[in-house]
Image (cartoon, rainbow, N blue to C red; front, side):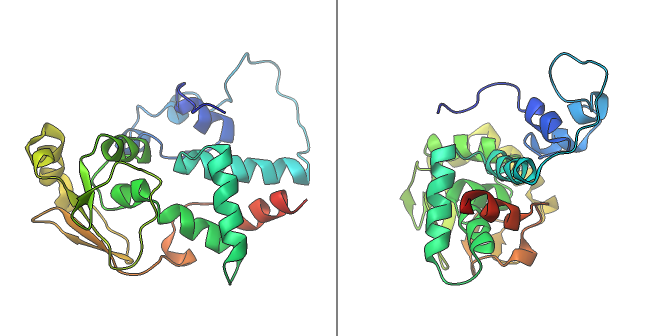
Length: 209
C-alpha cells in the first residue's frame, strides 16, 4: 500500500473529527472541518445507518493510523510488538507509536504536525544522541537526546521554531532545552500522557478477530 498523498483534510472529514494533521491550521477558521463538516464525496440525502461493531473498530484503527501517519503494514508490525510486551496491549501500542522519532520531534515542538516532523527527519535535520538519523520510524528510548544538526540550525524553519518555541507545551515524559532546541526522553509515556481521543480497546478487538 502506497502512502496517502491526497488532501489530509479529507481524512478528518471522513472521520468526522479533527485529527490535527495540519498543526496550527487545524485550530484556525481555515480548517476544512469548520467550513465543510460533511464527509467527502458526492453529497446525497443523508441516511441514518447503524454502524456495526466491526465498523467502529475499523474506524478507531484508521483514526490511529492516520493520526500518526503510519502505513497499514507498519501499524500491524507495531501491534504485533505491543502484543509481545507485558501489560495492556492497547496502551503498549499507543506507547510504541508515541516513541517513534517523528512523533517525538512533533511533541517537542520542532514541527507543526507529524507529517512535517517526518519530512524534517527524512531530510536529515535531526540528530539522535549526536548522530544524524533520517528514519522517522526509529524507536527512541529513555535517556535519548533529540537535537538539530549543526547545518540545520541555519535554516529558516529552525529560526522560526526558535522564535515560537517559548509558547510550545511539552508533555511530561519529555524535557526541552528551549535555548538550544534540544530535547530528551525522560520516560515512556503513560496512557494519561497521550492526549489523542482513541479507543485502543476497539483496535485490539479489531485485530483479535
